[in-house]
Length: 274
Ligand SMILES: [Zn+2]
Image (cartoon, rainbow, N blue to C red; front, side):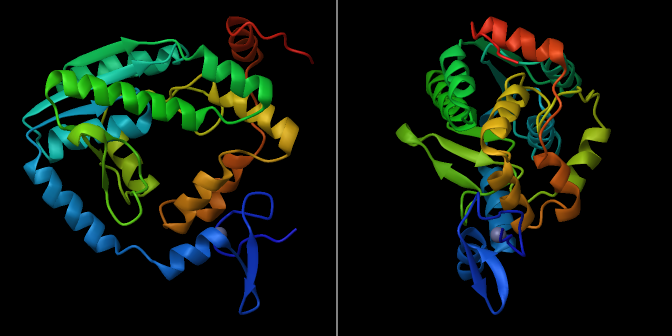
C-alpha cells in the first residue's frame, strides 16, 4: 500500500500519486501548490485580535480550548470574555472539572449549556462512522446563536489549523469564528498548559474531554482497519505542527477502559456484541 512521503495518509485515506519518484497524497499536493503563508496568517490573527473587544470562547474543558482561553485572557487581553461549554451529554467529568478550575483560575465567567447529542453518537456507533463533524457543526451553530443573543460578534475556538489561508471565517449573521491556535505547535501548547491547573484525563483517542471519541474510534477501526482521525492528524503533520514520528501512536486502535465503553453503549441504548 502506498503511503504519502510527507504526511501520514495512505491509500485508504487519500489518493496517492507518484511525483518525482515519491508517493505524495492529493492533500499534500494541493497544500504545496497553494502553500499558506504562515507569517501572513499569524499577522492577520494578531491584527484581528487587537480589535476584539468582546468574545465568547468555545470551551470544552479540553487542552486546546484551555490554551485558547488562556491566550484570549492573558495574551490578547480581550476586555470582555465569556467561556461557554456546550455539554453534549457525554463530556468526561474530568473535563467539566478542568473547565471550572481553569475558568476560575483565569477569572473568566463560565456558562455551561446542556444539550442531548445522543442521536449523533448513536448513529456514529451503529454505523461505524465518525461523530466529530456533526457534533462540531451542531456545537458551532449553538454557539453562534448564543453569541447573537448576547450581542457578541466573535467566537474563539481552540483549533490549530487555519481555515485555508486565514485564521478566521465568517459565519451567518456577521458572527466570526477565530481559530486562535492557528499554526501553534503541540509543543507550544503543552508549554502553556503546564502553567495552568489543567489535569490531563486518561481518555482514549486524541481527546481530553469527550467520552464518545474512544468508543467511536474503536468501532470505526474494527470495521475499516484504520483511524478516522488519520486525515486530521495528517493535516497537522503537513502544516508542521506535530512530529510525524510521534503521531503514529495517535492513529493506532485505541484501548478503551471497559467500564467507559459499556457505560457509553448502555446510555445510548445500544446492545454491545463482543
Ligand atoms: Zn500527504
